[in-house]
Length: 299
Picture 1 (cartoon, rainbow, N blue to C red):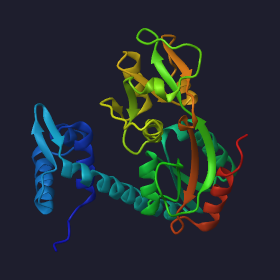
Picture 2 (picture 1 turned 60 degrees about the horizontal axis):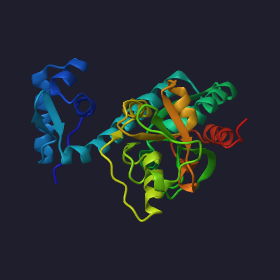
Picture 3 (picture 1 turned 135 degrees about the vertical axis):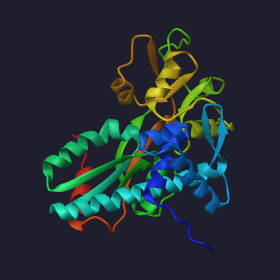
């Protein structure tokens, strides 16, 4: 079997094309000639024996094979970052470096404040933070790309010790111009026929919604999938559906008066975040110090 030849420039290029939806725009962004970028993609496709992108009007669209490869490419990109930054830490004389990954909701609500405390308590430790959904955080832990991962407890199985981190609850967010809800908490039955805007596969929001629908013997399906709470709120604002997010996340987006919230009834909307550590990369005392602080009760 021929070994795949893949350099860091091609890794960056594939990720950029997937984001931009265009080889030429990706080439411009990376200061590459468009012809050279196309040649790199063609060479990679030839090695794989499958097309990664198909041409569409005004750009390209990723194929099913490309989507499968993209998850591995992101991990390779993280590994390259890890290698470069670990080398930089060694040359700078810092004591240690710890890489932490967490979902956006945990980052906004809890981790940002904890990082500030960590920096104050351990200025000699270099911290790197990666924002990914719960499923990808677990994969990064399995592959030992990160040292500490924070993720929603029910989002998958990980064969590592889990430590309680924080809890939150989802609320329903809606446009007052398009929907009307009373002051009472809304149960899952009221949501079964509503268009729901959600985050994508692997997110704790989607996991919670699926859990709620399963409790009624229903499978959840939607065409309204976003990559972040800001874009979720944009769709909600225009009445395309209702959204689900923690109150603190909504507050961070500075919602206007035209948006309303209502509590959700049932355990399905309550989420528990845990953290796990992958031993081996970070200096052990530094890792234990960071873990101990993250496990402290919130102040």
